[in-house]
Length: 169
Image: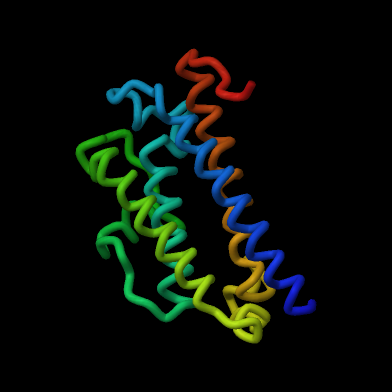
C-alpha cells in the first residue's frame, strides 16, 4: 500500500465512522428511556450495551494501539468489553447521557491518535492478536466502522421488537 493509499484509507475511514455514528445514534434516538435495556430475545444485546460497547471499543483500540491513556472508567470493561453479558437491569449501567458523552470522547481520542500518525506509522502492521481486526493502523477506522454497523443491526432488531419504525429513508 502506498502512503497516498493509506492517507485515503484514513479519510474514507473517518467518513465511514461518521456515517456509522450518525446512523447508530438515529437508531436509539426514539427508543423510550425505560426500554433502553430491552432485549428482543434472551441474552441479546440491548441499546445501552451496544452504545457502551462501541465507546469501550474505540477506547480499547486507542489505548492499546496508540499507547494512550483510557478516557473511560475502568469499570466499563466488565460492563461492555468483549465477553460481557448484557443485563436487563438498567441500574447496572451508566446513564444514556454519560454513555453518549463517552462515545464522543472515545471517538475524538481515536481520530486524534490516527491523525497524529505519520505515513510510516499508518502502514505499521498491527501486533499479533490485533491484526485480526485490521492489517495496519490505517485500516483501523474502516474496520471499526464495520464493527459499528454490525451492532447497528442489533439496534435495528431492538427497534423492530419494540414496534418502532425503520430509521432508513
